[in-house]
Length: 170
Image (cartoon, rainbow, N blue to C red; front, side, top):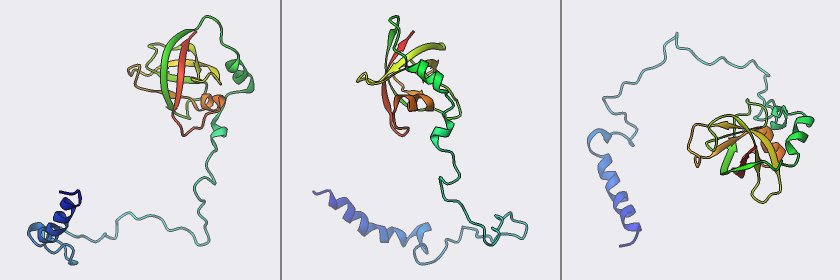
């Protein structure tokens, strides 16, 4: 029996099912008798009409660019990118997505910590490392994390990607 057989059987049974019961009349331009069709009343709220000549901006023309939301100063970024101190403790690895852009700063919300602490995140290949505030997420350690927009930018990672990070406490 090939995988096409159930599709063929379904194609043959569908018209038969449509001809009986509550489906009769559907597909022939009819509406089942137990469905009430009502027209809007005069006091029904309707969208306001645009003024003639009003142009609608296309998506992205009036919005903010991600760089505009990055509120970290050059000095803060330089301090965060400084080499790690020798007294870091590895906490584990996590897969991080973009956190809320409304929350500024350099932070990682993760299940690897239970209280706010200073730490460091590093790309697995060692190409970039960044000092961040580690914030507890309340989730299990393997549940994934959220990384701030500023941290994504500082690490040079695309905002639409999931990023694997090694996490250290200081």
